[in-house]
Image (cartoon, rainbow over all chains, first blue to last red; front, side, top):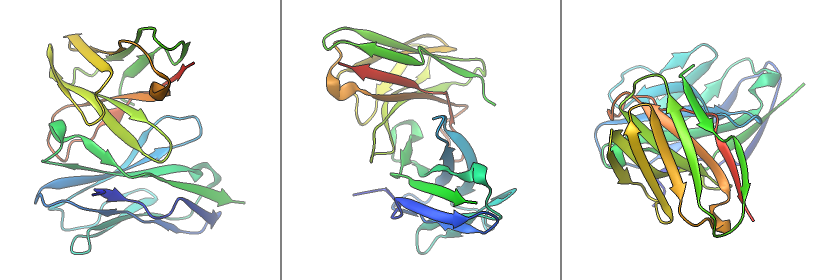
Length: 116
Length: 114
């Protein structure tokens, strides 16, 4: 079964608007971490934001916030005030106890395009 | 930025030849990982290391071997490259295996097997 599901292969957003990228996850472990990475066209993987399963508050990092709904097993990334430089592939990933050395399990990604 | 380099950054090779990719870190992190990225699959773990000479398999380890003789270096070897191993390979590091620990990635190596 898919542990991380990203149902939006591609998304478009107008510059300066907010956008939400969806991510649902599946784990039976009580302790896990959820991560979002950005991969621009240049190819590197850039860490954006982290949410722990025991965190009471949603994580925020500048223009990035994570809408964490534990009961629904969702961890959506919200980007506020989109910029042209936000155009990239975005990956949701999870690290739980069951994986090898707590490996990261990735979703298939969402390609975000910011329109001028 | 985490100090992670990968070499080579690009490589073209022929089926049946051995290939070694190198990951070098300057962070002194204990854990190192090799992932491959293919369209539609995100990143998948090949092998990982939890210390010098300590390595183990990931979910897509067939056809790959690894070695770690120094904390800072983690080598991935394709013993006899096949076209199905054409991919982008990423090295990652983390300080621990705690679920909250972030993994930081190197710049990637694009490998084409003809």
